[in-house]
Structure formats: structure tokens, C-alpha cells
Length: 258
Ligand SMILES: Nc1ncnc2c1ncn2[C@@H]1O[C@H](COP(=O)(O)O)[C@@H](OP(=O)(O)O)[C@H]1O
Ligand SMILES: [Mg+2]
Image 1 (tube, rainbow, N blue to C red):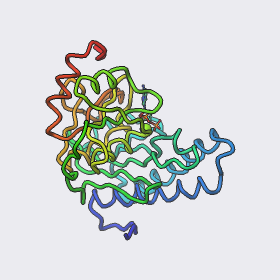
Image 2 (image 1 turned 135 degrees about the horizontal axis):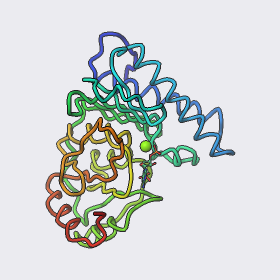
Image 3 (image 1 turned 120 degrees about the vertical axis):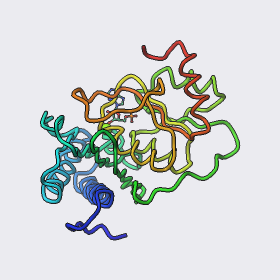
């Protein structure tokens, strides 16, 4: 897989190569810094990936705005037509735990109201999912639907919805890794509520939509990006055939946040 970054790339190709390249840098940082001081490793990862992505976007898309978890928010993005929404290291906690592969790099492009390109790199798995190349997941496996949810901050809503649809909960780190599990057919639903930001979901949602999956807020409303407040606290990504049942279970749950 070539990851060379040149001036001629489409936005989707650029997103994919940037995410892959930042992911390789993160693997190097993991090897160099080691796991003895997880806090130091997390800080080095956040900073190293942010530096690489910021420099590359500045070099290859100098006119575009950027919204990143690891940079000061520049309100100029609110009047920009094109905004890159990036999470240089999603699943920071898992990145700092030896042996875990559930962490990701997110690079998405928002243009005039919609996500138009995106990539989620899973460096620990050696793969990158891109809107340019993604295909729908394989058919659902027999058995109960598998719901991926936060390892550390899963809301009660997840267990409640799992019970209502006869599913099982699978804890996994990183929004990108969870979305990827659904996109790759290793899980059927990713449900989250109670807090998250635009950078946590923009690239995963861009790829999920390109793969033909359902991706909305938990009340079924569209996920909207490049908003003044980047808080985007909940989402559901799932196979289209499960969306109606999942949204109904959320509505019926007395644990759904108002
Ligand atoms: N309640 C909450 N409030 C704010 N952010 C949250 C959150 N729950 C999850 N997130 C963010 O969503 C990403 C995935 O989390 P999780 O693995 O728990 O599902 C993490 O991003 P970062 O690792 O980039 O900080 C995490 O910080
Ligand atoms: Mg994140």
C-alpha cells in the first residue's frame, strides 16, 4: 500500500494517507517511549500525531480550516467552506496499554454541511478504512446482535438496549475502532451516549455512511458537524436492517438521556 503524500491526491486519498502515516508515527512512538509511564506515552502520542497532521494539512491544504482535539479551536472554521475534523489519537487510554489494538487516527473532511471524505487508521491492526475504498460489511452472522460499547464509559443505555433487542455487549476502546468493528462485520451496533466530541465520530461516521451503514444521533436525527460547540454526545452506528429496532429500543429505554 503506497502512502506517499503528493499534491495531486483527492481529499479522500489524502485523508487515508494522512491517517495511515500518523498511525505509523504512533507505532514508532509506542516503541520508543514504551509502556512504563502510560501518561507520558499518551502525551507523546497525542503531540506527535497532532504535529504530523497539522504540518501536512498546512502543507497540502493550506486554505482549509482544521478542527482537532489537540489544537486550540479557531472560530474561523465556522465561516469556512472546508474543515478537516481530526482526532490524532482516539482511544488514547488503549494506546498506552501494551498489546491493545483498539486505538485509531481519525481524519475527516467536512464541506458545506456534510462529511465528504474520511479515514480511520487502525495502526495496531495494520489497516486503514477509507471512504474512497470501503465496501459494505459481509452479511450478519447468525446469533444475537453484538453491540460494541466503551470499555470505560459505557452508559446504562447500552445494556438496556442490548437486553431489549436480545443482543450482547462487547466492550472495546476507541470510537474509531468500534465503528470499524461494525463496518468490518465483527460487530453489529455501536451505541454511545453521555459525551463525545465531533472529532471522536466524524471520520468513523464518514466511513460508516460510505459503507452503507446507518449513522445518526440516538434520537434518529442526523449527526451535524462543524457546529459552534463541538460537543456531539451520542450516536448509533449499525447495520441498516437493525436501525429501526435499535432506535425503538432507545426510545423505550428509561435510561436514554433527555
Ligand atoms: N462521556 C464522555 N465524555 C467525553 N468524551 C468521551 C466520553 N465517552 C467517550 N469519550 C471519548 O470518545 C472516545 C472513545 O471513547 P471510548 O473508548 O470510551 O468509547 C475517546 O476519545 P479519546 O481517546 O480521543 O480521548 C473518549 O475520550
Ligand atoms: Mg477521540
